[in-house]
Amino acid sequence: MNLSIRKAAVIGSGIMGSQIAAHLAGVGIKTLLLDIVPKTLTEEEAGRGLTLADPAVRNRLAASAIKRLTKIKPAPLYDEAFAERITPGNLEDHLASLGEVDWVIEVVVENLEVKKNLLKQIEQHRKPGTIVSSNTSGISINAMAADCGEEFKKHFLGTHFFNPPRYMKLLEIIPGEKTDSELVRAMKAFCEKVLGKGVVLAKDTPNFIANRIGTYGLLVTLQEMQKNGGYTVEEVDAVTGPAMGRPKSATFRTLDLVGLDTFVHVADNVFQNVTDEQEKAVFDTPDVLKKMTELKWLGEKTGRGFYLKQ
Ligand code: NAD
Image (cartoon, rainbow, N blue to C red):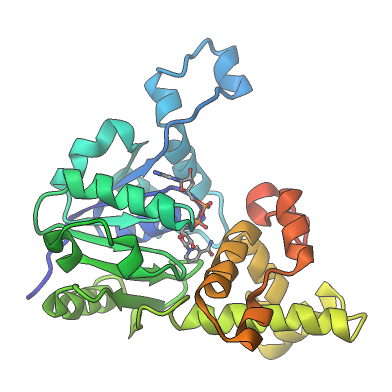
């Protein structure tokens, strides 16, 4: 089986969805980028006399995500002109369009119930044979599709991109127990050849491979910093970033880039799904992260995390 993917829909236009859409646009795939309908007007919209029914408001989240893409450095778009290949919208008004694409990628918040409901919606509107994948950081692929039918499950799998998707070569592909093995092989080839990724096939275990190891490392680092008293965020970053030849991947800078809310969901996913006491103790969300997420110090997306956004 050789895949020909010309049109895609990315659902969720946050940090990852917008950048995945940019990557697809960069390789010539026409991409719909869809998000939810805003429930309130911004001051600027109210000032212009717009209402919640105006398309400019209804499509605002995805449209502003595309504008944001041109401001992020390093730029997620290969060329600003490629933004024309991305059509922003809201899911509610574009459900029928899901029947016109070859690949739907779910990139919404890391929450099992939200993802399950969304997959049911996608199932109702996709055409048979359409590939559907999730960018989840570690929620079970089988659990997510549990309420969907057999034909859907055959075409559903995890495609886990890493942040920032244009530059991170790794892509984990996670087959569900019902995913067509021929499709897995074809997706692997497509993601390698067309998207330029280095694909690793992972099992459907909590947080798959990279995030199981990555979250573990970060949580143990936090515990050690507290236990041994006195290591600062800057000191840890100095050691784990530039000094190790990894200028962009210092521990806490990465956490700010990922988003603390997403990180907490990802760590909690292992906590909820393992029974080993030692492992549970590591993956129990530390108070400092609970407090920071309560305060909305979520990292770059809210302007403040371990660092202030410059
Ligand atoms: P985010 O919070 O930046 O964006 C999520 C977006 O989904 C928001 O714009 C929100 O409005 C939208 N959304 C929520 N429910 C929706 C629905 N029902 N329909 C349509 N849109 C909806 O999150 P993110 O960091 O982009 O993460 C998205 C997914 O990617 C998560 O599963 C996360 O675990 C995974 N992921 C994140 C990273 C990272 O570094 N942030 C890396 C790899 C994977």
